[in-house]
Length: 454
Image 1: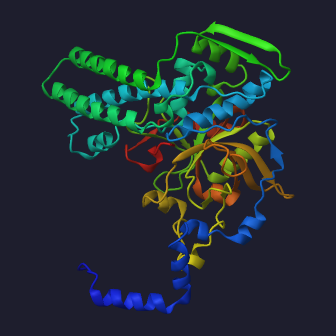
Image 2 (image 1 turned 90 degrees about the vertical axis):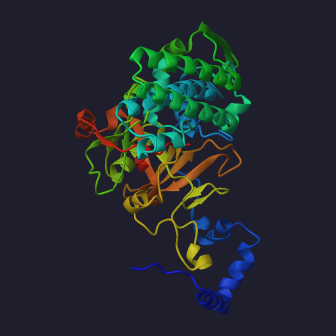
Image 3 (image 1 turned 120 degrees about the vertical axis):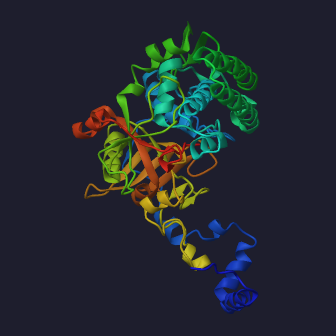
């Protein structure tokens, strides 16, 4: 088939047809002055959706957190999930774990992981302009992450209260720090590839990586601060009684005070990828995806979405919040905090539908969908027939959206745009747990299931 250019006569015809339709003119007048998505909000849908649920965790975390201008949602969602049990156990009215603490160590580890990937791909004979290395160089370090990656950080470095390692400018607005790191990492990548090409010994390559990482350590420390070796946490509980913990290391703090109420190793991550090339009941991983050299790999136990909904519902009924990953911006009314397939009526405004015109598998294949954001389920509604209808969601965008920072998500929206959940191992059927024992199928580095939550 030959190419079809757009000619002037065609555009004239389209223009005439456009202005013959009064609805197009009205939509144009409105959308030229207002957000097209706000204009498309369905009044009928808004009247039917309420932030009320049949089951909620006993007490939700306070205050509502805010990741600000950073891609740390996966860290915030994890710590929001953990703190619910921690606050209950320690009788706290408000509490936050330090998001910057895990962010700091992820930056250090992620840069080292990238440099090791560069050495590994050079040893594999991958060309610098080949698809794999080009993909790695496109974004040498970002803020986003996955569940297995945050488990690596917690098990290696522990946790600490936010008061003991507070936010910094670059934690809340990470773009400039990341720009410096990416520039240096690309420079370091060339140096390492040149060493490998020049037949340098393993010792020489490792020494170069260590030298490079010392410079990275300085940059990250200047921007984020450096976590203390030990800290002391002082606090009042709900009865106004004074407590003091420490001096203690972050690892000991996790082991002694957090792990007994929330052990990250007791949780398992399940995904739902309906692409026909990736059958359910298999475990997958992604080439070159991770954050800690020698840490646990990112594993995807692929299961039908109905199982994920069932396990999340059971978990909430048990009073256990659930970390999950989704594509948050599709069919999302941000101000109202509603994620629902019918919340927008795009056909009325544009004469065409968007965002759910392809099925979930095809959206993954054609780049229309991916897991881009992580949050926490804290509530669920079940109808009289036992069917799950909607979920309550704790986000990390502050308290000025939705219901004081919380969202409501329909079960139908979950089916289309949720990709992974983390639930307690005890809830998962034995045959599903056995999938983790399989040899993982390795997906290419650029596969959409390797997209990181930000």
